[in-house]
Length: 450
Image (cartoon, one colour):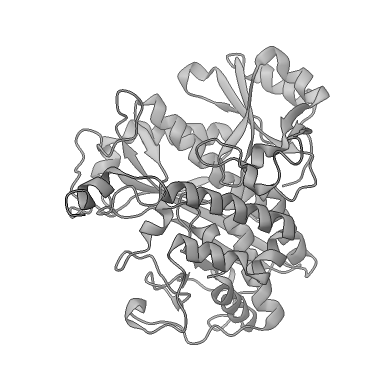
């Protein structure tokens, strides 16, 4: 995916083909992967395309609650300036719900680039390209569907006809999909209108939990954007059917967590899969070794919120150690069945709430590290990896993960000093604010016994 601006002719053709569209949401994604932008009228679209638009550079340093974080050093000190922005070609698309009156487009902010997660990923891609290697990637996302509260608050109420019993896992069943078929049809209709290459939908193990797979792309920046836009499509479909959809990593302590699994391979200049071998190539072993060696450094990328760390529990198919194996879902790095062109890694560490731009950037950084240093991943795990002693474990406490990221030269080099510093400050501030809140659980557990 390039930074080519949308042309006025493209905008006019879109408006002519979509006469019902009245509003266009134009957005970028902050460091958390949350869309931030402006809504324009139909009649203003061509003017915006010709003249561009302005956005504050602080759009990237907003926390999940919508606050710009001064502790990043990129707010008050800079005067919070506006910077020019433009719509990216190929991203203007309809949102065919609610009378098809809305459309959307992704914009690029013309900053120095060090705060834009999309640019961070593009930089990692460019480093591999100089070696004659092209990554091919696909995103898989899990999510829950619930009923909205009357005032819009999030609830854990499953839609009618669906169980809320976490022990009644319906994995790979069809009952919940049948119950919510109109909602699922809506997702696929939106995806078709927007050119999102979605593949299978799967009923997962939690109450009203599903997984949707995206097809592989040889453009990892576009593959990451596919994941971000799929989230938006799922949520739009949910609203249309008076439902909520959440990609929260762990919505309930007794329910299965929701993950983001990344499938990736590497092609050489002849479009041959350099991971292929008997059963894998030496280069693939080095790539796996690099992913294992750097996995702990990037923990705040895989798990970016306080809730994200609740997903790392035993016997949940969520590994807490940098282990790998063939066709083994108990490890962090799974090599699915298949050989030759189908040889690939399945990276299973990130939560569904993570930012796909950063997840893919961290994976590419790990692969590059492994190839450059000829890293050895050790023996592959067979059977239950949780019963095999690992040489190291992942920091599954938020504060420890942030400390590992902050002191990591690998992360700093991969993401750039500016991004590394700002992301650390952004997340340390969020952690401090989260941990100071007294909750009802504090009262329930401690008020009467203290």
